[in-house]
Amino acid sequence: MAWNARNVAGELRRLPLLGVLLLIPFHTLIVAHVLPERLGVRLPVLAMWKEALLLTTFCAGTVATLTGRPTARSTPLDLSVLLFLAYALLSVPFAPSSPAALYGVRNYGEAFVALALAARFLPLSEEGIWRLGWGILCVAVAISVWAIFQSTYLGPAFLLANGYGRDGALSASFFVSNFSFQRAIGTFGSPTVFGLYLAVVILVVTDIGRMRRAREAVWVLALGILVAALLATLSRSAVLGLLVGIGVRRWMFPQVQPRVRSEARPLLLATGAALLVLASVSSYVTALPQYLYRTLTLQDSSAQGHIRSVAETLEFVRHHPFGVGIGQAGPRALIYTGKLLNAESSVLTVAVDVGVIGSLLYWAMWAATLVALRRAYVISSSAGAWTSAELCRGAFAAVCAAATACIVLPLNVEVELMLVIFLLAGAALASAREAGARVAAPTRQASHDA
Image (cartoon, rainbow, N blue to C red; front, side, top):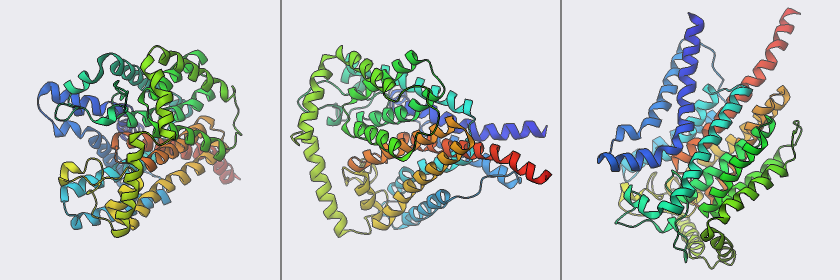
């Protein structure tokens, strides 16, 4: 009976987190747009399903702690999250708008709360990581196929019919200047968010599949579809993040684990498959080189707008070093404040919101996550848990990719995307801790017997 109770408690802590991780990519399309349009009513309770699942995990973990069951000790990452949340909550009473302030706390803190929960309650075995990798890949492939089909055949009419537009028109970000076709957005709210999601999935699952000797043809086809969809987003920041993630992964992590195939072959084959798919959609083939050329030569209007926004915000921060109040800046703060105060950079948006000190505390959580993932990789490698090590390696690269994209766009407030990234990071930390504990247990037993 006790054994069954422990297993039930463990599943209550694991399954909600896995549910959020696998289902959150569908939230924006289905919960935020399709269902409200089809039902004719918005259901705030339904929109809070992910928070309810996170709360379930928190409650189950609290019960386990109160009943004396062993839990992981606090880490510097836990302390950094707690420190920022305390700072953010203390800022709420001083913010000009309380609803906006609470919205800001949720935007900045929810993903890191999920990270802390996953790092404690989402340990996965080698086989469990493999199954999770396949699940994430299958979800991403399904969304990618839908994204290419929707943008190519259904077009803007589908998005307008399902509540994506405002005043009968879509945002200019859904298109590229001088081109009329719609960028792929998948099930997310913008092409850039979708592109970064694909970059994260590619970084996380590629090495897991190679380590587990996945069927090459199936794996390459899946990666080819993801790369094709990524190119169809025409997201410069997502591609930049992917390239930085690949570079950091190679630079920071020595290739000491056993390899079953060459590094270049899957990526080359995936790129070739992606180009074949895109070749059937001539608009993208025509747009890509021109879009890249205009970006590099700063002729693109959006690139010019980014530069102006950064310059203006830097001047604003210089005059407001303590910020204007949490939740007052960002792409969606307009809903609560009635005025648009935004910067084309997450770094600057956070600084405008919570000031320089708050910004340092916020980005310290990102840095602490990277440090913890690097240590977790060493632990997994030492324990011979190579799949766990690859998950740590991929999650590290994914966080770096997201941080890179956040430098040039305000993406850190995209909660659905941030939840995917930091739940994966938390799963990597928990799995590495379990792998280290499994190796240490026989050693402790031998010492005790001696």
